[in-house]
Length: 528
Image (tube, rainbow, N blue to C red; front, top):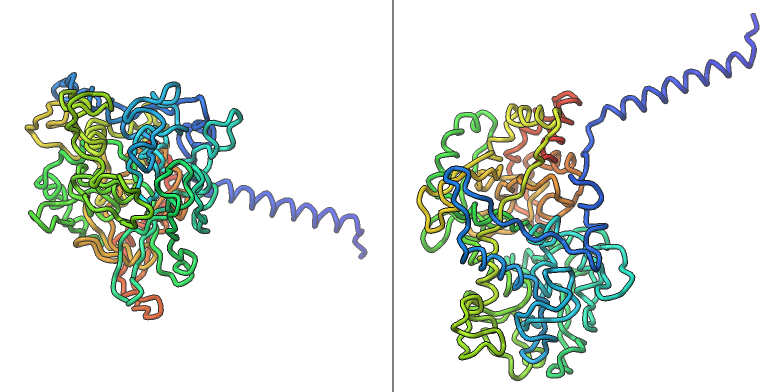
């Protein structure tokens, strides 16, 4: 019997359509990161344009238990801290465009990024020239985001990584942008794993120098060169860190050690069943729990502020009085050290009068006061049914054993707005082994080469990039990257043996979820 060719063609076509439809249906069932909560305006692409102010950091909300609010003085310090953190730094005391500390007319309050400098002290080596370069998303004080590369021009360009064009070339600086700073990629800080002699390094190596800067007549012959980042990248000797948000850090600092340990002890048996251990990083001086930074290496937001000023902007201060680069040809002959210190002037001609309460403290101290009274990230006030389901699933598979949903601040504090209130941070503030897949081979305090602090998840719904190195903007991929089997030493890469990730069993549980429940977890996380 003969079968007509047209019948065969129609049959094949029909089968193809069925297969294609089935593939499309299967794809539609795959869980998908719903993306940055708030839509395109919150991705940094449309928000950070000239003439459109980025929202201020949120002032801490009233204490839900007592109703206490910030005092008049606390609010004043918080608002002054915003102005200080928004200052654009020049390199010498006589180079600022306006009087030190002054809001730049028409540009601060703060429309961002600034064009004119209103502070000084920028170091010969630095990663940024103002605090909010690395902390502008989705509000000032958040994590790293995109910023217009041509501030001051009447027609703004598309917002991008400020380390791609803006900071390295601002005011004529002659820097070569390394390949890992991509136009629409994350802001990356660089640490070297090892020194040239093979001993451990682990320190930050600043990206940029002031060589070629046109705004400082005192350093025309600065000849500093950048490290060989591309050579170190090829050698596998670089470890990247992306900026963490500063929102709610005063609340986290107000949690007592005993609360952290009690929360950890309460889940001991459940964690043991899933192979999860965890331990705190501790101060080498007083033995108390440190809790800030990717490896919980910093004890307090005060230490964090002083270190950030010196390491990220090269600005010396009382906490870090020695410059990271002391080349005389790039420092200028009259630059005082330490540069940013408590003000003791007799009058306020330079906004530094000792009898002006808002001007006494150094910039870095006002910066830490801003952080202390900044509220934590606000979750979606109307989470979807899927997001509500996702929180149940999140806890049922063990995610909450590390990402502790809530802790409580100290029962009595000098600031009533901070005392005895819940902190919905979703972190145990402990260090955990994450295995070779996430290891950066950097030791900090008691944090080993594959250990990281459980990153607080509040605010994750509005973050663009994830994990310590910003390797992905896909939340699903970030979850799956928590899985890592044990690995032997790798002498070529100078990697030690790494244990299995403590998250492995939880990730296995996640993988076994239905597509519906996986999607619910993603929706829940994006609601935070």
